Structures are given as structure tokens and as C-alpha cells.
Amino acid sequence: MKLDILAFGAHPDDIELGCGGTIAKEIANGKKVGLVDLTRGELGTRGTAQTRDQEASDAAKILGVQARENLGFADGFFVNDKEHQLEVIKMIRKYQPEIVLCNAIDDRHIDHGKGSKLVSDACFLSGLIKIETELDGKSQDKWRPKYVYHYIQWKNIEPDFAVDITGYIDSKIASVFAYKTQFYDPKSTEPQTPITSKNFTDSIKYRASDLGRLIGVDYAEGFTVERYVAVDSLFDLK
Image 1 (cartoon, one colour):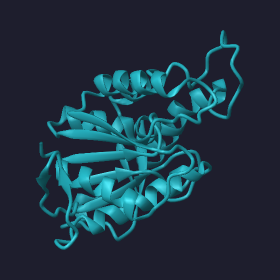
Image 2 (cartoon, rainbow, N blue to C red):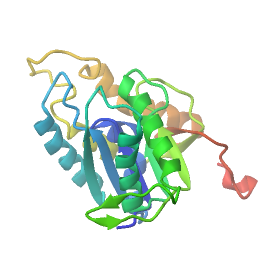
Image 3 (cartoon, one colour):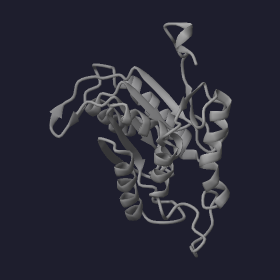
């Protein structure tokens, strides 16, 4: 199955928090989108790998993605080496996306930066014909995505560009709240974490609103790039 966009996240819920609105918008515009989680988030203070699996499935249905997979890497301990790169390459070659979205280059959680670099490196390596991979017993063709963009997470990193997600903020928030074990719940007796506060929950909307304000729309999501953004005309810029 060829996809237009393949989004990677170190943990289930990274994608929804970072670019859920953009994904919902692109799907509404007819694009085919898939998601790949690197880990099952098993080290998370709240919930379990099993509950995260179900929550990820629920979130995928809300967004309407074509596919969602989990590579089962070790939460907190995966590394950017050949073994892990090859598994990511298999996903890239399987879905042959034009665009890859992945974790923030620098962020509070150590897995975010690691996941970002791992996926970015795998996107390059996936285009090398002498790297051979197989999936389900079949040899895969080389494939290099045209673009790699990094969504913004915990840190307020200045974006290189922003996507107008006005009209899709509710879909984004609904996909995030599919992770019922992870976020604000005044009735919960489980330990508190940086993402379980009401302030964090509220920040999903007010951060999108503030970035939207800066580009003249209601809501937006920001991305950073590893190379210059190119346009055909000055009139492509808004």
C-alpha cells in the first residue's frame, strides 16, 4: 500500500500531540496517511503496553488513517543503530511515502530526539539500492521520501513553517484524548506526571491557537526542517 504521508512517533500519542491536526486535514483533503509507533510506551507511569495498544487503535480510527503499526522497540532504551534502522527502513519501503513526519529533533524526553534521528537516518538509507531488506518473505525496492519534517512537542521550538489546522483542532484533541490513561483525569488515583495536569491538557489548544495567531488563522501546528523549504513562487507563501 503506497501512502502519501507516513508519520513516526517514539511513543503512542506523540504523533497525535505533535501533528494530529495536520494529519486529519490531509486525510480530509484525500491524502493517504499511515502511522508507525517505535515503542509501545511501556515505561509510561500510567497505563500499560496493552492499554496503550488499544488507545492507539482508537486514536487511529478517530483520525481515519490507512494503517498503524508498532515496531516494538524498547521504550527508553532503543538506539539509532543498524538493527533499528533496518526495521524503520522496512516500513518506509513498505509504504513508500512522499513525506515522513517524525519526532522533534530536541525535546524533554530522550526518546524523542533519538527517534527523530533514527527515522531521519533511515529515510536516507532507505534510498540506497545496496541495502537489502525483506518483508513477509519478499525483497523490497529502495525508496527515499522526498521530505522529512519534524513536529514540535514539549519544547516551544520556533517552527520553520506552520500548517493551518483551523477546522481540525477538535479531531486533534479527540485523538489525543483517546489515550485515556495518559492525560488529565481528576478522578484518577494514579501518580501525577508532567502530562497529566490540566495545564498540559489545556496547552494542546492554546498552543495551537497562539501559533495560529502568529500566522493569521485560528489554529496551527508547527514543523522544523533539515533543509531549506523551497517554493515555486513568492505567491506560494502565505
